[in-house]
Amino acid sequence: MHELRWDPQLKEWVIIASHREDRPLHPTRCPFCELDFNDVLALDNAFPSLSPSPEGVKEESKELERRRKAFGKCEIILYSPDHEGQIEKLELGVIERIVEVWRERYGELSKEFQYIFIFENRGRQIGVTLTHPHGQIYALPFIPPLIRRELDSSDDYFRSNGKCLYCDVVARELEEKERVIEENCSFVHFVPFWSHWPFESHIIPKRHVTSIMEFDRQEIEDLALLLKSSLSRYYDLFSDDLSYIMALHQRPSFGEFQHYHFHIEYYVMNRENQKFKFRGGVETGAGTFINPITPEDAARRLRRRKG
Image (spheres, rainbow, N blue to C red):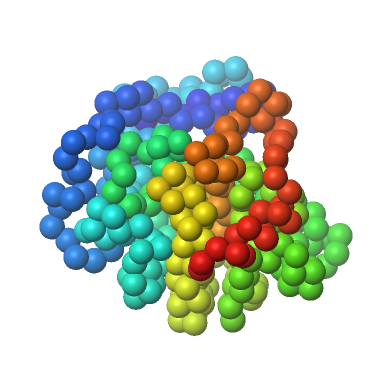
């Protein structure tokens, strides 16, 4: 079943995908290792939460029971045929190819679907079921709530200040330097002043771009450099226990969103070696995060690691 159900109290869609209970959990033989490929590979998810042709769902528009077909698409991006081919271990040319595949799939899927969410889950603490290095793409029929909040806040900021919220954040971080981990010609990697997770960090382009489709060749190469160095720093700090979500935030497929700014967010579960941050009662039940590490200390510790 691929079904959307409307939550009237939070005003957001929930995806119901009961068939995903059948997913393999850490199988003895990796199905991705059995594929014959030598390049970055995009393929359909075998257990998708969304479907381009959902069936068996009766759509309803009752005030308290709104239901829609979960129209969309779920894809897997395999980074390498190597089972140990995490991004920080790959050659720069391969990482550039990952960025290019992200851009190619965004360009294709955005013709049909409202929001293209590109992300990676890594580590058992995140709930990863297959450890072969890979990312995912969810092509959604709606703008997800977190992105909607960012769109609204950046629009409010632009209306009040006549400038991009994210461009101003980058300028402030580069001026203060305290939370900057690394920068190159095109991007800055830093721990945000308001970080929710202990070692959360963001990568933001210095040039105002709204999606990955606007990247030039230099920005593709510079993003590959920062992806490799940022994840090398995390791995140097936490080794094989490293658990994170990497999320690409960019404009929706349809509409005008020039006030928005592409960026990448890392939500890192680790707080110390073999110690993890989980969402407790206040975070999950009330939506208010408690961060046990100051963003400034997190930035200092990441700067000291090998990039």
